[in-house]
Every structure is written in C-alpha cells, then in structure tokens.
Length: 333
Image 1 (cartoon, helix red, strand yellow):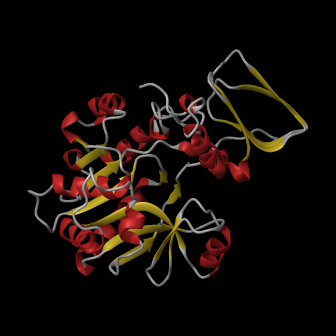
Image 2 (image 1 turned 30 degrees about the horizontal axis):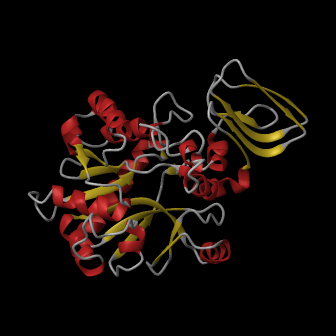
C-alpha cells in the first residue's frame, strides 16, 4: 500500500458522547475502553498497514494542541493539514484534495473517521486494498458498508442499487435494512481525479467564506452516480453513542459495564447499565434500574436510557443554543 494515501478526518465534536465529549476535548481524544485515545488507536492501526509518510490528519485549529501532541508521538506535524475553518466533511475533503494537487491525479486517497473501533487489522487491510482497486478500475468513489444490527437513525445507508441515503427516520431505515442496505462506515476511497470530478459536478468550487457546513454524504454521496461499495469483512463500531459503547464494554454478572477502571459502583437488583465517573472517591449506587447510561463528570451528569442515547445529540443542541448553558458543552480551550 505504498502509493495509497490515508487521511484521518479529525474535526468532529462528538455531541452524542456528552458530557465526556466537549468542544475542548471531543470524542476522538477520549481514551474510551483503551489507554489510547480513539485518534491514537486510528493512527496506530494505519501504521500497521501503510507507510508512515502516507498518513495525514485533516483538522481545524480548534484542537490543534491536542493533535500536535499526538502527531509528535506517532507521525509528525508536517502530516497535519489545517483547514481554514470547521465546516463539516465536504469542505474538509475538498480542501485536503487541493493540498495534494501536486500528486498524480490517479493517486488513490482513503478518507476515514478518527474515532471508530475496527478489528482485526488484517481484514481491514484486505478491504482497503480491495476498495483501492475498485476505485481505479471503475473510476468511482468506493464506500465500505457495515452489516446493520438495527435501524439506527444516526447512520447513512448504502442501498443495493448503489444509492445513498443519509440518516433516514426509523421506518425508512428498517425498510432499507429489510431490502439489504448497509450502514455507511464513513470510509471513502477514490483517486484524486475521481473525487475532484464529483465535486465539480455536485458541489462546484466550494469555499469556506461562502459555503455553509455540509457533510460529504449530503454534498456528494447522495448525488453521485459513481458510488460503489463493498461489505466490510472486519468488525466495526463508530462508538458514537453510549449504547454502542455499552456493547463494547466489559460487563459484570449483572451486565453492568464501566468506561474507565476508576469508576466505583454497587448495584442492587439492577441490570444492563453503563456507569462512568471521573472521581475515584465517588461511589455510584444503582437500585432497581435497567438500561441506563449514567455518565458523571465534574461539570455535568447525564442519565439516559441506552437505547435512546442517540438523542443526547438533541440535548446538546439545546445546551449549545442556550447562553446560560452553552459553557457546559462549548467550553474553553
């Protein structure tokens, strides 16, 4: 994979993992279920399958100090691409493509999120080789789809007819799954030439001053006629909400899991809960409760059912739009 470039998109704020995830320390910098942050895990994974010089991070200035610290350990600061502003993945990808304008237009680039769980690495590598070849052969953008386990409304769906639908409602998501649709992993591969051609057709000459924030899925994936996909052979989770983290966490005999080893809890007649506290001196007591995420931080406490934890994003929208509450998510750098 010596000629394939990998770009980690690292600009999100992870609102569904509030209150652990905030603007100054978003999801990708959290050591969730590992001593390493999700971003570090992503880089380490890529270092096992690609040349170090071909791995880059695209981000805004917001969390550049944290990214520099990680890059100094695993990559170099020269491999950090800083976009002018944070305006979602469409502009981030377009800006990055222009960063590589001196490369051959037939160079293959894979864009991937900074904050997912993927295992095992050998299957991930084989799938990346496969999508690179398809992208060359078909002059297409190739997505990696995930077998869906339930109608999750937080994901995009890749349909069997190669069309893409971003975050449908639950009824439509269930219909798509019945008809063989896959979740979108957010991992896209194509040649520079193909990416730029699709931008010219569907999102021509975007710029940071005039464009509103728009995802690559909305700007390109839903519109392109040159989308191919494969079904992932590896295990995948976007660990994007407390419910998905619960499924990955270690559980006791009552199916109660913790995010970090410092969390202290006792339970009585309680089952299927995820608990977290950053205060090792605090004891969390659970009595007669089920299906809850209880996430305690020095500034905020979240109590949510696990199966509705995707709605934490909606709660964060309310927090961020309130002048009096905004600082609970949009905090100081």
